[in-house]
Length: 336
Ligand code: SAM
Ligand code: DTB
Ligand code: SF4
Image 1 (cartoon, protein in one colour):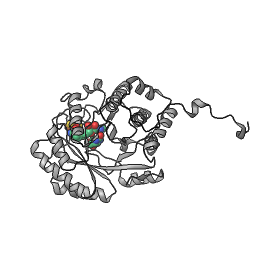
Image 2 (spheres, rainbow, N blue to C red):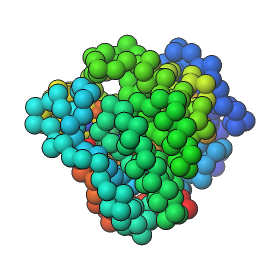
Image 3 (tube, rainbow, N blue to C red):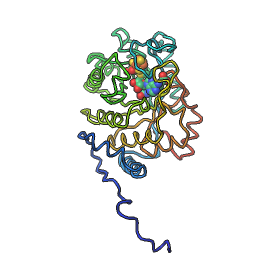
Image 4 (tube, protein in one colour):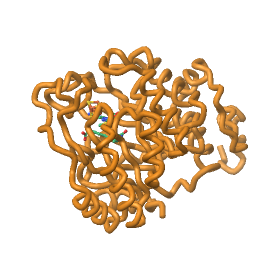
């Protein structure tokens, strides 16, 4: 057949999913609707995610955050994925909270390497009030370097969240991790409601919320649906949604978790993008085990943020040069 006279693309293929391109942000997603997105043929899901992504963001840009563990190991919680839990055999060595000056020196290195946000993590169930003074000094110092600040310190009281806001903290990371139903299989030392309460305190204090979860812990697709449902139906969507692929660390209960189909991970990114269209979706832990092609698929699915630098908190991340080469190969650039 002469290509020039070929029949036009059937309507169903041209617009397979009725995506809302008005820029509206919904909080009334049902489990059935989220389930239906996960079930879409892969090309239709990615096309829908791309179209929505472009309403809110420049698809060529990736926001870059660098992580630093300011207090490592010896954590009282029993999160089954985490090498920092004192409950697991062979977990990383417990260290004290870093000195403020040392943190600021690391932040300077991250800034010079091109990061726009500096995320500091502590292996705490929750910070002690006396730690908050040092933490606030870290936030103030990192901001003075011209970087955005993010902290992840465990559960926060309303008062602690207010104090962090007072120091100028831009983001607080606290993940829901998985669905409410699967949660108890992974963590027993704090509840889903505890996590929701901390997110409330952070939101009330006026700090931007960073909250997402982990894929590949042996959860079902319905659990991934449930995790997205819990995130999208928060009173306000998290400004930033990290989607982590489980990093299987020896000695943790999830070290031998069954591998997940990589396309299922990409689907989770796409569904997060479609349901939380104005949020940054971060392709977080797990990139060290991903091919360049897999990461490119995640960007096509609407991921627009990464952790950059050779280390996450305690486990390896791709070398910065390799990441810059990847972005260059894809014609993408770090977000200013
Ligand atoms: N201790 C604080 C807390 O849990 O709230 C803050 C740090 S904690 C390491 C931050 C998040 O990192 C966890 O909620 C989890 O989602 C993620 N994480 C930890 N270990 C991981 C792993 N092995 N693979 C993927 N994500 C992981
Ligand atoms: C998040 O969602 N992922 C980051 C960050 N928040 C703090 C942490 C990933 C940690 C991976 C395991 C480790 O390096 O210890
Ligand atoms: Fe502790 Fe956070 Fe690790 Fe859980 S994820 S064990 S709270 S450091």
